[in-house]
Amino acid sequence: MAEDNEMLRVEWINSGFLVLGDDDHQQDHPNINRWIIDFLNKKELEGDELLIVSLICHSLNFDIPFKATKSVRSHLLRTVRMKIAHPGWTRFHRQ
Image (cartoon, rainbow, N blue to C red; front, side, top):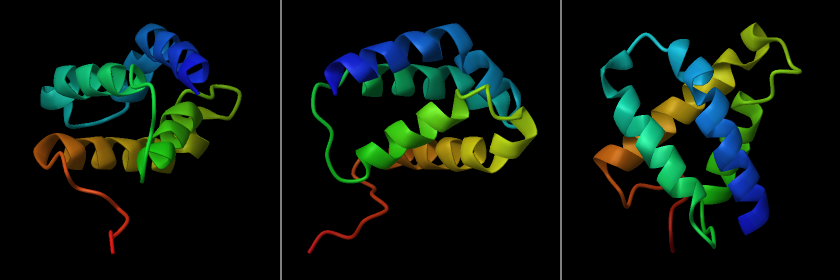
C-alpha cells in the first residue's frame, strides 16, 4: 500500500495540476494539493481513505477521456474540501 501511494503521490505532484485546473473554485487549490500530497504520505489507510485513493487514482487516469472522469474529479475535490474543513468527517458512519 505504501509503495502504491508513493507512486500515486509522485503522479499527483507531476499531474495533479491538470485535475485541479478543471475546477472552477481555484482559491483553495494550494490547500487541496498539499492535503492530497500529505494524505498520500500516510503508511496505513482506514475507513473512507481507500475511497479517496481510488478517486485520486481515477482522476489521474488520463487513458480515460478527461471529460468522462469529470464527475470523479468533482467527487474527489468535494471530499477533500470536506476533510479539510472537518478533519474527522467521513462518508461512512461509525457504529
